[in-house]
Length: 211
Image 1 (cartoon, helix red, strand yellow):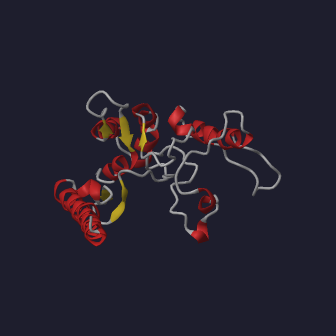
Image 2 (cartoon, rainbow, N blue to C red):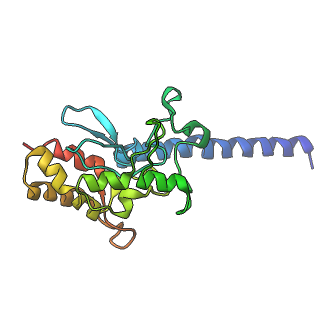
Image 3 (cartoon, rainbow, N blue to C red):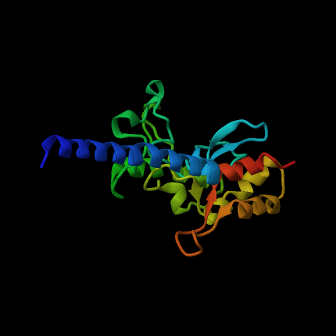
């Protein structure tokens, strides 16, 4: 056995495998994804009526105006972790993930129920009182975050609970708003996996097309 010859074979095999799995395969997958699945491969970006990119269909956003449907809460506020605006300390924990707060955790209870304090900076306006004040029937997904904390969907029930508020703010009939909910509801994957969900960003973009 010639050691130099065997070493040469090993080097050639390594180079061929590297070329296949580190160059050809990734570029082939990139080309296929751009041709066959262009939108998902590029982040499922959504544009408004002016053609401006306003977000991704895969990541939730915060909406507070009465003219729009509210998304579900997020322990990261759907933040991009801007160092200058990292009030939630996201850079310390990552930009995605649940808060892992137990149901009895005071921090979770304060966020949901609110907290009064002589110092306005320490007072917390709870999600539950806010929803009730707006005339919205609280649902689980309007009070609790998802596992990723970046969920772009709410349940059809949560969307329906906000119809009256949105319709009143936009001075349109509730029927027109309800139709948009149906049109922007994603059904179960393959008809059996998961539950129907309403993509909040898509729904709010559709609202802006109403006349």
